[in-house]
Length: 88
Image (tube, rainbow, N blue to C red; front, top):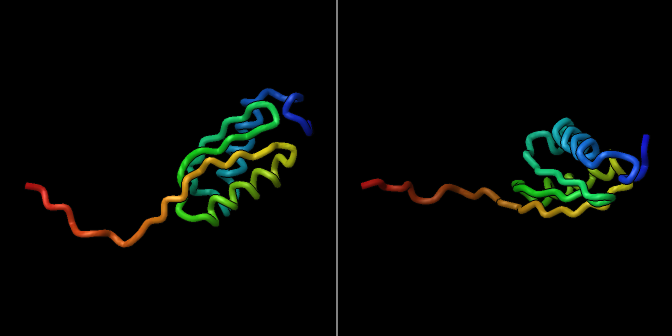
């Protein structure tokens, strides 16, 4: 197995990272965009908590430890619904 991004096509590495994020129970429900450039992986999207964001890093490091992770994922915490919208 390659241990450096230069050994492999970036699209293949990105596909592996996306698959790892989709299959791992800690991150399975997340729709995260993955972009690999050299030895760097950029993650974008939204998650519901800081814990979910942190788990993205863990999963990527476990699967591809040689990648430098740039986690640009936003935490969007869902709260109680507000007043119902009245359409007129």
